[in-house]
Length: 183
Image 1 (cartoon, rainbow, N blue to C red):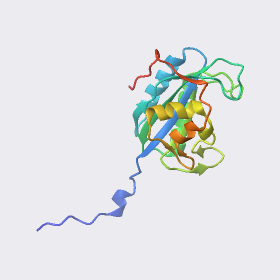
Image 2 (cartoon, rainbow, N blue to C red):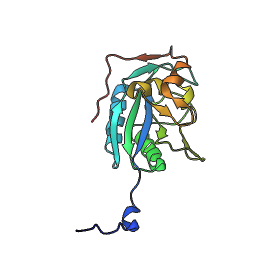
Image 3 (cartoon, rainbow, N blue to C red):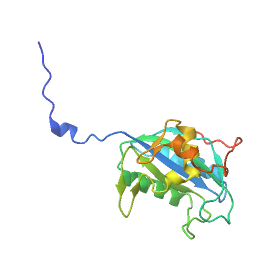
């Protein structure tokens, strides 16, 4: 009869949990569909990050500052062992690489990549708030996310389907002739 050696806790200390990650991506300057595809491709190239889904593309009315063109928005779903701060930094680095300029708050932009959820993680510090602090109020985030994951849940707020049911979604329209492919 052979027995397995006892587990040594030091060998387990580097394991990190695999968590569900949700990003909201959007833009309204330039060839937005091309930029969204590039952002998805760059996110998929991230180590310890597996893209598991992407929503259909939605045309959405601008939020916050309405004197600008409509946006194209998608939701990206992934599984990752990366820390939340690294996931945030990766999104910001991709925004920079794709020409994002931060000149006017809620203004026109080539790309916006918001980290919405990392597992059930709740975080509130000056650099990162999880889940995203206004995601539960924004149809342009929730409608694409619901499209990609009908069972989605926003920690601290409930099921995305219930949140969408309580929002005005009249400014959110699925775009049939634009598609973002998984790399």
